[in-house]
Image 1 (spheres, rainbow, N blue to C red):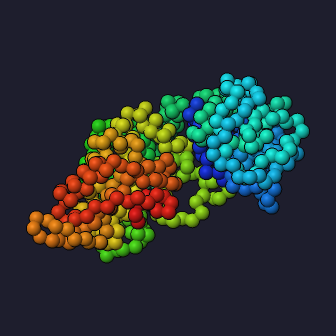
Image 2 (image 1 turned 30 degrees about the vertical axis):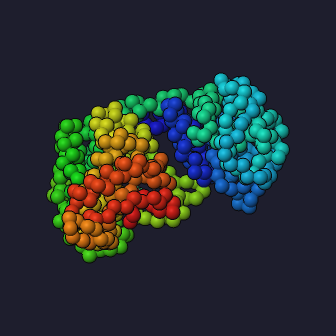
Image 3 (image 1 turned 90 degrees about the vertical axis):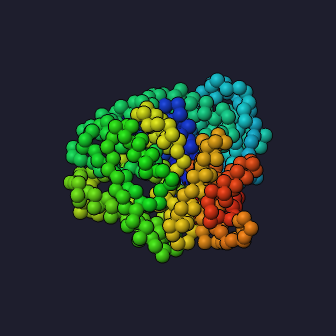
Length: 511
Ligand code: XMP
């Protein structure tokens, strides 16, 4: 299904860390939800497919100078509106109530519900609700009534029945509000009447149909990651031989990676051209210490490899990319992460003279939706569940210069860490698990003699979206067996450490 064929709920983003989560929760019950910046034009927000609008939370106060506000035309329209946290306060202040500073409330509260219908239809008379706010409604606007309260917030849920406008001081989208999804369902489906036809089966078949109208040849770089694999399969089903898939062996891949990727595509019946550019990548990286320089060089090497390929095998008219929805949408208020801490761009743009248009079949999807599409298309689950792997590969796990020796240690030790995580049955609970190596040496005793060997750092983290991450509290016997295997199987390693820094302040990769 192209996105325009289904009803949608628009979520206006006021900068909450949970804004994307609202969309994801709604999509879970097969209604299309899209995140737009808080100041998006009324006409764009209220397009024919929009059945309701949600105002997200955010860090601002409605009484502050320059407080972010939606366009007035949206508030004046007949569309149902639900405000969450800051969005609730927008509703209170814009329709004539008063918002005041309150003592900060953070954590679980019990919401007493005064309504058994509408937004709270099908719910009990009380429920757990997750609060995170510093302001609250002092008076609510005329025409509104209180439909829920907590011990500290007298107007934790309000509604204007005749105009179908609702405000919730708490966050229904987070898992800490266990019945929150029911509230979002009641709003989107019962109150707004949005159709539940945003299914990945429908998306898959309509995307293949749409892509089949592509004229010209498409170049698609594949890495073995979920996104590029799913893009390749969609395009192969749509345009067959007009698709050329390219896999670049850059010398920085995991153990056996290149052969596994080749095998998977062979099983899927999709031809892949493998470019072995490892010598060129590793030569360009020799003597380079700075991680950002490494990324830049790797980006340039990828561009060079693709450019050479398309000169030889072209012409191509299109380049396919695995861009996902969160990559497309930046947070409305903050304009995305405050500072670009690492430049996560691997394939910097290909030269303009190649004249390639861009095809991004996944730009409306979240990662879990991409996995579902991959499952429908028959991509093996081993690939769909695979941990993310950075585009610059092992280069960001080797601190200091990249040498053949450090590369081998990093690759072998990472394989051991992954194998141990898999055999402990933890693979799917873990975001990433690998080993990193730098130039630090430490003394060890091997046989009867002392030797200086490398220090290897094991990094195993849990995360939801890589924006934050926590180190995994692994069982000591599991750490022990990783450590023993690393020192036994890799001669040059004498010490093994476990990284117990969370993100922030650390990042997931050491470089
Ligand atoms: P950090 O290290 O910033 O990583 O906490 C967050 C997520 O991004 C991955 N990562 C990269 N991915 N190119 C990529 O494609 C990069 O340069 C890069 N650096 C980090 C990292 O593996 C984690 O999943």
